[in-house]
Length: 120
Image 1 (cartoon, rainbow, N blue to C red):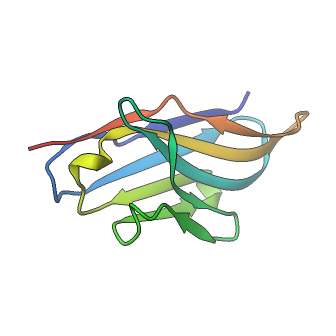
Image 2 (image 1 turned 180 degrees about the vertical axis):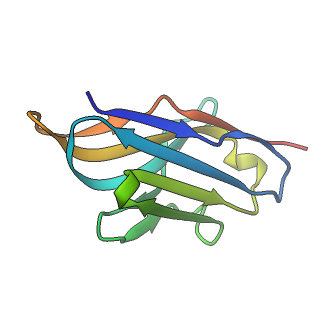
């Protein structure tokens, strides 16, 4: 079974920075895109940033210029560097991996989420 584990969340002051990590493990044949979604209290889950296996990135307008997504294909890991954080960035951040696992069809695999709280 493919497992996706996030780390790096926490409490940070407005204007501060935080780096999230997400590692996929298990019987993975190929990873296509990877990325981060977030869900604030009382709101729907929304896309934050994604990156393809070729390195093409996509960002929500609300995070452009402040967040940077990157990946290490050798480690099956994706990162989200968050800077100039605002109160409205407070949310649970979920990592997803679009992968083809051995003996399974291509599917999205999700982590359990990591809390990011921006507060003074």
